Image (cartoon, rainbow, N blue to C red; front, side):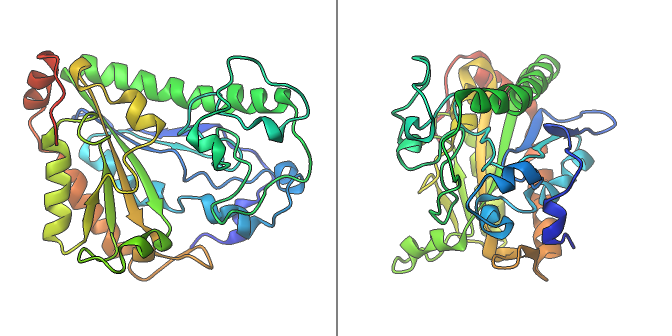
Length: 306
């Protein structure tokens, strides 16, 4: 079990890790962009917040939950640094000008909805809404994080996608996330109940319908409540990489944290092993989809509506 203090280590890890199978046998890339849990002591000291509060934005243990990917012949890419430090599921320069001590370059996107709520490439708040920084940042600081952590992550993902598509005729990015159990509050009065999983395909345009249908059917058969695209239709990764007409598909999977962890203590619950078994089955079902069926639709140059 991972202790909280382990998240504030002294030796900085690389920007990302790729866990590869001995041989890639499936046209899938699994990616966990928000499970990074290395909190650099210098970063922590620059904030208003303690490490526990900083972790409110972390998709804790998602990389571990999807570690079965390699067993099924697919690579798993994950960040080591947390999204409160730099968020790789954003455009490269979605920045809030109020965070900085000088004007930002014209190429910076300062008007996105994510920036408006404090959740840009360099977030200003954690998931609970608490402000992160004690001072204004310099653009040089933001640029260094983007160059040293954001760019390498996406370079790795692009290379995996390119190699996979070349080998199989299509590539499928499964973008893996978790969500606070509070997200389910909006469903508490509905007939659907709290969502256990939310599948995002940008309302049917980022991946082949076979992929999301397979995921939904498998999880529903296990008794989970599954919702599509509400409130998470897919972030930058899903939107940017999901191009079915070009042979690249992207599906975002959000798991309700109440299923597998203690959200207050950031520890796996007794249900973690059970969930990992179910995700193992989900990945197994996904990789059994005939790659030729996906590639055939991709070559036709049209996205399949889910």
